[in-house]
Amino acid sequence: MSPRSKKEYIEAIFVRYKNAPRPRKTLILDEFCATCGYHRKHAIRLLRGFKCFQKPKAKKRGRPPSYHPEIILKPLKQIWLAANLPCSKRLKAIVPLWLPGYLQHFGDLPHEALTALPHLSAATIDRLLKPIREERRLKGRYTPNPHASSIKRAIPVQPHYEKPKDLLGYLVRRILRKCDLVHHCGESAGGMYTHTLTATEITTGWTELRTLRNRAQVWTVGALTEIIGSVRPTSTQTTALSFSMHIWRR
Image 1 (tube, helix red, strand yellow):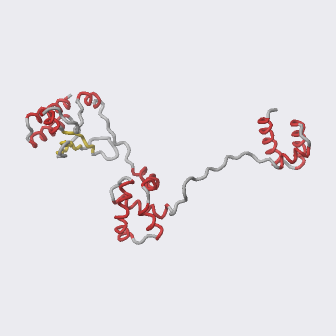
Image 2 (tube, helix red, strand yellow):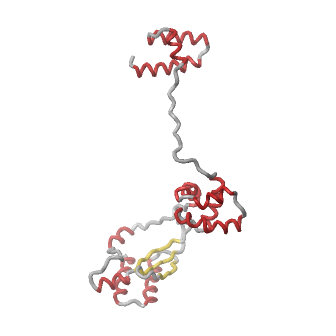
Image 3 (cartoon, rainbow, N blue to C red):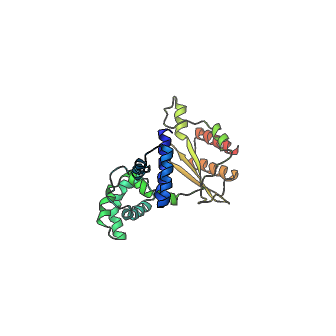
């Protein structure tokens, strides 16, 4: 019997020997001595001093927290919601500024919370707000277009920050627009709902908005035509946006 097999056998005998009544222990001890060839007294000492292997408990890394999460979570959540759900790095800068207003509207906080809130790190804020963010996350809002891939491949893409090589390139970059449809469907994309066509001039940030009854071609092309007429485009602008209308018709 190998040393490893002997150790496994001793562990199995130890469990039986520990839970057995006194008459049964004598029989188990006889079996153990006959199998391993131990002297009876040595076998008794071995079983009495045997310790079953137990996986050590993992120690929590890092220093212990200097606050109680349940005390600071409520004011942190209220400030996060009032600030329109910013990221943790922005919220870290907002909390010290908004804390006096929170005290004015919701009353005093314990001294521990007043001391801990302004010094929370961004990682701690992420960890505390993670379950709340999961509860408030909207699902099912992405409505892909089955023809979007072929349309996107037909449109040449050029970053607006690249330096043009000639005057024509500068003019094209100057009037390039980014168009997008915003879906006002809430949490469900079923049924009919309105859309907003957003056209932004990427250099100046000028934005034109048009409301669409749905994504039908007649409303989309009509809105694009109205945007072209409202900005009084040059011939180069007309060419670029006419190409966009051609893509929409496809």
